[in-house]
Length: 343
Ligand code: PHE
Image (tube, rainbow, N blue to C red; front, top):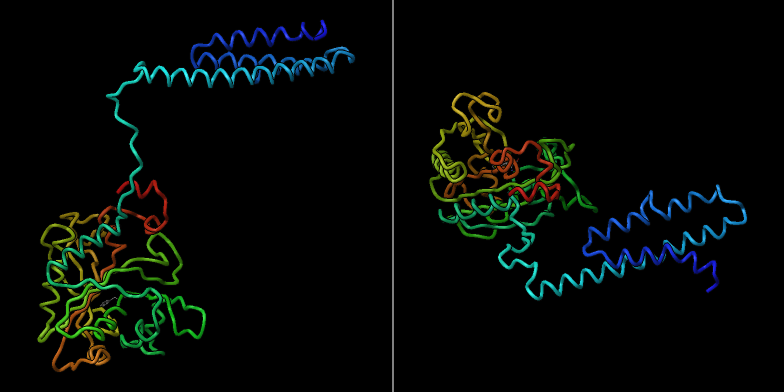
């Protein structure tokens, strides 16, 4: 080492001594900042280069860089040493509080749609319904034809269908009603069925419309079924959902696979005098429903003179929004954990 170099090494030796004397991470950080920070010694040295006589400049730059590397190495190794010392101390039982609660592991939770789906499945199973599943990619036949919506029926327009590639014979199901048609084919009456699941429509997406949403289909087939049975079942459903007995009313509604068809409204469970949810009408639109159309029964191989039934299509997405006061349907399938963590 030449004389001049040993002289230059002095600031580094000083820094190393100060670093070695640091007893904790905070002190170490302060020393590190003093040397390597934005206003630190290294930065000042570098900034001074233009003011040095030209012959000195390369030397100053070199010393600055050596100081920087040396300080960084000393800081890193002392940081490791401090961490090791802490672990050793903890092993000896110092600075370690065994009574502190451990960090909480991240836990998942059931999606609010899964929660209502399971609750309603339990409710209907307790009334003797079976829970069915159906394909989300459905044939034109089950999604429309078997439900009395033939090829040029105007009701097809309102279904905003996603067609799968090919001859248009496969579609993303636009409702859970195709499970009605499948259940009629597969099982002998009498029959009680619910079928929850995803549905798809090519909608312009906004706060109340999404291209993917959830419904729960219901179908009951038996002899001598009347609208009174339908209303009775829906009142039980309401009790299960809102935990109270709510008055209902039927308005006429048109769906090609039920006759008569209805929109069933329930008294608003959230207010006595009108609120935002019921738009001050005291009624909330709950679900479309009706008595199974004779054509649908025939498609399922049943004689409409012998068998009858009712069907309903509960919008699960809307129900979850009502229950949790969610103002935008896009939250449901948006996948944002901050949203999901609330349930
Ligand atoms: N499937 C219908 C829809 O989504 C709703 C419905 C179901 C109507 C069952 C009547 C009976 O538009």
